[in-house]
Length: 151
Image (cartoon, rainbow, N blue to C red; front, side, top):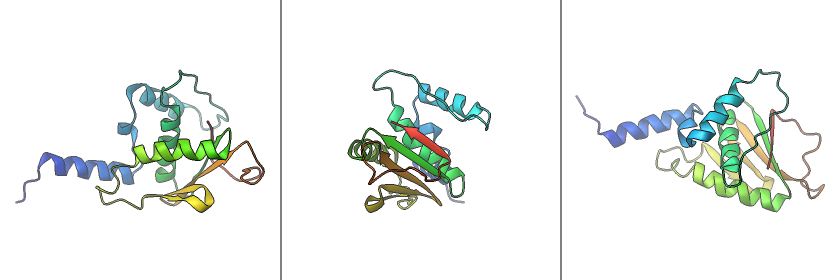
């Protein structure tokens, strides 16, 4: 019989959580409360607004939410839109790198992949597209989306 140490068990649990899109453990307590409230809304809810202070973690939560939805659902499309594409890319790249920093060590490097040429992330069989309100070139008008997050 093989005895596993605590770190090995913890990493196995993290890997399972990642593959199932159960990332609530990566959120702080207030983000978890907001997430639970949003998840409890009726599926017919079309708009939800999060009002909280500066530096709360809204952008990080948006990336985590996009990742969770993408990993939990087949072909789920999240769009994250900011004031302009340059700012959106900068905000999302920073937060996605924080969110996904443990994937390589868990052997899940390709679970979430950045596609720079298309301003998007592949998340399992789903995608997160980035856009900005500043130009038509990166306009997301007319495209499908299961969820749209405004920065």
